[in-house]
Length: 180
Ligand SMILES: CC(C)(COP(=O)(O)OP(=O)(O)OC[C@H]1O[C@@H](n2cnc3c(N)ncnc32)[C@H](O)[C@@H]1OP(=O)(O)O)[C@@H](O)C(=O)NCCC(=O)NCCS
Picture 1 (cartoon, rainbow, N blue to C red):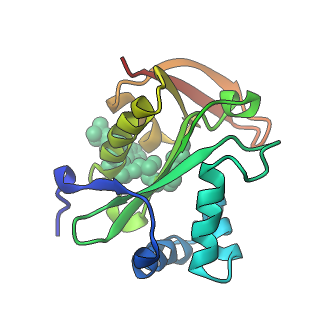
Picture 2: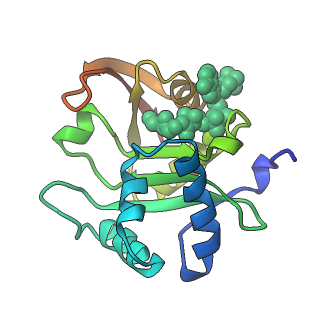
Picture 3: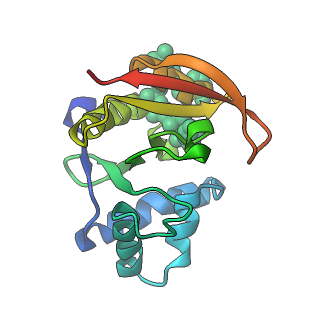
């Protein structure tokens, strides 16, 4: 069944989303996409409640503040409750995020890809970024991640440069999106 992009919204998890969230995470595991930080964090916790607490701690900037800036986690949701994407808004940059990571990170569940979800999700996140007072956001992707680069470009991203990631050794495209 096709996805009605206009009906999708960003939500923050509550205990009521446990089943939907487990279903969402399971799809990444089944696809062997286990390299995402947020998936590992999810797997680390024994209970969903602990995962929710972790998300809240991150949003308040209390999780390893010497390394991580405050970041709010949202999920892209269908009206019926199926979760299609995960995305994080970092409230400001640090030297590491300036090179790679930027203000907004995201992923779409494998079965929902190539249908416009990432484009819609990022456009909704730009509203959230504006709401916390950002005038422009940095969004980055690996040089070979065509889908992510197109998602950024379709949301008005202007390529500033490419930098070499100290983490992966790969070239990273750095785009700015103006919000005003
Ligand atoms: C990258 C990702 C978020 C794209 O999600 P998506 O929902 O498939 O993206 P959309 O459907 O909105 O597509 C956006 C554009 O990218 C293109 N695109 C998407 N995936 C693509 C791919 N694998 N190869 C080439 N182009 C691709 C689409 O065709 C579309 O461009 P168009 O309108 O010019 O045709 C998704 O593949 C994903 O979650 N990947 C793993 C996590 C990841 O890489 N996150 C980004 C880290 S920077």
